[in-house]
Structures are given as C-alpha cells and as structure tokens.
Amino acid sequence: MEATPPSSDPYKFLNITLNSDGSLTRHRDFPKLPPTEHSKDIPLNPNNKTFIRLFKPRNIPPPETKLPILVYFHGGGFILYSAASAPFHESCTKMADRLQTVILSVEYRLSPEHRLPAAYDDGVEAISWLRDQARNGGDRDTWLSDVDFSRCFVMGSSSGGNIVYSVALRVAETDLSPVKIRGLIMNQAFFGGVEPSDSESRLKDDRICPLTATHLLWSLCLPHGVDRDHVYSNPIKSSGAEEREKMGRFPSTLINGYGGDPLVDRQRDVAEMLKARGVHVETRFDQDGFHACELFDESKAKALYDTVEGFMKSCSMTAPSSNM
Image 1 (spheres, rainbow, N blue to C red):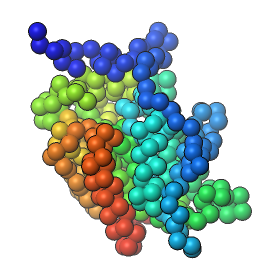
Image 2 (image 1 turned 90 degrees about the vertical axis):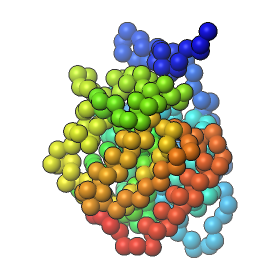
Image 3 (image 1 turned 90 degrees about the horizontal axis):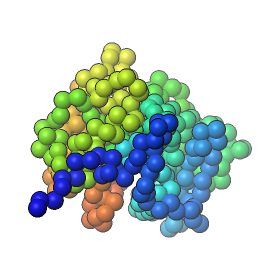
C-alpha cells in the first residue's frame, strides 16, 4: 500500500484543530526556551501580549564597537510558533554571534485568533519601539547602549519574510530617524495566489510545505471574505498605485530561496516586482534545499549566515538607498 501523501488532510498535517469559536488548538509545537544570559524579553504591547526577545553576541565585541541591529520575524505560516520557540531562539543566538549584531526577535500575534494585518501592526510597533529607544537616550535599554541605530536591518523567514515586506510598506513614509533601515532580508518568504505557480504545482505534495497546507494557512490568516489574490498574499497581482510607489522607497533587499521549496517561484516574482520599482535587489536561489532547511541543516544555516553577513557589510559600506 502506498503511503498517504502529506497533503491529504492539512489539519492533520499541521497538527491543528479549528474550534467552534474560530480559535485553534495547536497539538504540537516546538519547545519554548526561556531567555538566557545573552537574551532577554522586553514587553512590546502588554494588551496584545507581544514582546521583543533581545539577543546580544556571546563573544564580546572590541571596545567602542557599535553593533548593527537586526529586527527578526520568525516563520510558522502566521499561525504557529513564537520568538521563544527553540529553533528560532537558537537561530537568533547563532546569528547574533555570527553576524556580530544585536537581534530584536518579535513575538507577534498569531492567526486565526488575530488575523492579518495584526502581525503587520505588531511589526510596525516593534520598529516604532526601536525608534523611540534611539530617541530617548536617557531611558534607553542598556543592551542598546552600544548599537549603531543607523545600521538597522529587518529580516524574516517564511511568513516572517512576508511580514518584512508588509512592514516595509507601512513604514516607507515614516520618519524613523535616527534609525536607518539599511536593508531588508526575506528568507523563503511566504506569498501565494489563487492560481498555482509552476513550483507549487510541481511540488504540490511537498513533505514540508504541501499545497493544501499552504491553502489552509492562507484561509486561516487572511481577512474574512477574501481569497489568496488579496494584496497581503499576492502583491504582484493586487498591489495598487500607492503600494507600488512605496515599494520604490525600499532599501537594498536580499531575497533567499531554495529550488525544492514550492514557494520559490513566488519569491522570484517578488524579486522581479521590486527590481521593476527601482529597488536594489540581491537574490540567492540555491537549487539544493527545501523550505526551512536552515533550521535542520547546519551547512544550509552557515551558507545563509554567510550570505546575510555579506549583504549587511555591503549595505553598511554604501550610502543608504532609501528614505527609511
């Protein structure tokens, strides 16, 4: 007897149950880790139960060194996981060391209890918090005393990559000074659409990201009454003049993806969309890899960190390419 394809029951595949009140029961999750000596949680919006998990390098930088800042949004299809989930906590710990940067990992609200744009709003609130910290020197968190607010980067993986894009749109015309966003990093960003892409059709029974599961994720996170061509999921098809104008204000952008990821064609299309608006876009598409592979494969994680490090250095050495 052939094995049942992973896409046959998306609720079972994702280990979730949709309750009658519209909430989810999440039956399996990664363990959540507490802060350590080199990380701590800072409340963002107590009413929304959001926070920022702040990471600093474990290896002490040279005296007088001003570290860059990386604002990070975790993955999970908008419905799963936390900034405290073990893979994301451990990844941020490694990135802080490897990139010699202070990382602000954002605990944003999850769908369907809080459908989009809730996660985007939380992302904007995190950027605004950072701006306020930069402006309030006397009341600044001590872990931010040795950072360079003019070298800020915003990174996200999977749904977090989608949040990076949407947050950038929302702050494109906001005065963030003295914070300067030098670059955006979208790692395997989660975008969608009603008509499947070639990679989605080819990999519809993918073991990590099957098409029926991604369709379910969008149904749980998009506003009620819209389809997958909504601008939150399909900006290529549904962006209007205002969104396109704001895209042109984006700083340098790195888009990373893998040939074995069903979402890879969407990521390529987003890269081309931004290039058409005059954004400096760097792409790295590795044919050997699958969705979220850097969480399970040390060599993929190292390659990703190497790419991000090179991108951050190149952005730091050139004049800012946007008004952010």
